[in-house]
Length: 289
Length: 261
Ligand SMILES: Nc1ncnc2c1ncn2[C@@H]1O[C@H](COP(=O)(O)OP(=O)(O)OP(=O)(O)O)[C@@H](O)[C@H]1O
Ligand SMILES: [Mg+2]
Image (cartoon, rainbow over the protein chains, first blue to last red):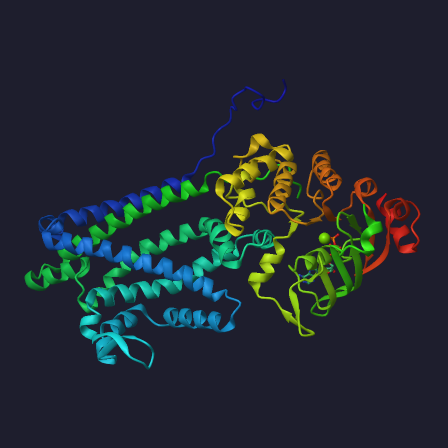
């Protein structure tokens, strides 16, 4: 054979391409990393001993669980509300669709922090809340400050805002399902709601799940906002401690480490979920085009 | 097949000067057509002539802009009340659609359901048929389209021809009195066309009323009672396949056939 190297069953005998840029970047990054680690280890202001003391302290752990709990409930409200809003938004009834649009517009158009503060001050806005027939008799009523306790304000603030964002994610997922699916269901005489529940939503889930994972991770960190209304989640728990002992930096590190740990767990879970949903999607065979 | 008795029996489909426009664009000009029960009608015509649009009007996937369209003696999508025509509620439209099966060019099987689940979904959910009974019938239908052993396969695991046969079984599961086919074989590789046409031929012999949009003139010649040639949103010519396909009366039909054959 005249040409050297490439052939069936023959190893290619070639000089591999060199990547000097990679080596240079590696060295630079290594130097910076070493500087960072050195500073972390030697700067006494980090007070790693204090970090260790408080990392598993009882109030911190309680705050951590409160954060987890808040994330779960707020996301549950967000997902259920988001699906509901997305469906309303696509309603053939213009009034219903308009109302959903208005909701999304409002909750996405104002800062979450402002919304959370609003919910905590709802008692000032409506001193008495009641449940009953509009303009008619009421069945339950009470002082708003008791009806809307801190936890409710926190969860409503986070959940109702999340619903607005989830609505757009769900809507994109539903719109991504081939129109032929709805047509086939209609041709079989399936009503709109049934088609949505049995045919469209299950298929939309594949595109809804990955961004929902991102939203959950983001929600976990966003829960720290409710520390402004003194709801005792992770950040507030550490703040209460450093307000007493002035060990601000180590306690913020404690909070950061817990947030990192929790988001890492969620990221791993998200990967698993996406892998599961990517399975079984084979290319179509025997079809032209 | 019983075209002779069409005068006495209520026609399965009766279109009277049906018009349909999409904004400025007129897709159907004046389509008049009668299909008797048990009759097999093939719609042929060039691309864009309105064949799909007409088919979709029949089960109200598309709302007609004018004229009158009846299926089995009842208006499609509307009801007449004291001489006035009123729009039906979506629920009632859905109920009417259950009597009309439709098979799509791109199959449109539900990809997240198995072949059997695709078939029993509507009978169980909208006819409230018992699951065991629906499953029994579903398996029988799968056997009928030659797919008894693929009940648990997902659409992505089936060939195009198999998918289309499942789609036919799915439509039949609703016990329709009319079946609409929109180019059921044109998305298939040539070697898979035959198996689908075979099922349709069988269905025709069993007396199902069928309207088939197709480019398979061989099928039209063998299985159709009537062939309809459409062009530019109008019905140009209607006749038995023997005359229309071999000795068409109109120049446009002749021009189309000479291009296709
Ligand atoms: N949803 C729609 N909006 C606008 N125009 C449409 C729509 N559906 C169909 N049309 C137009 O109506 C005309 C008839 O279309 P139709 O799909 O019924 O033709 P066809 O005979 O089925 O053609 P083909 O053989 O290519 O399937 C075409 O000009 C098409 O562009
Ligand atoms: Mg068409």
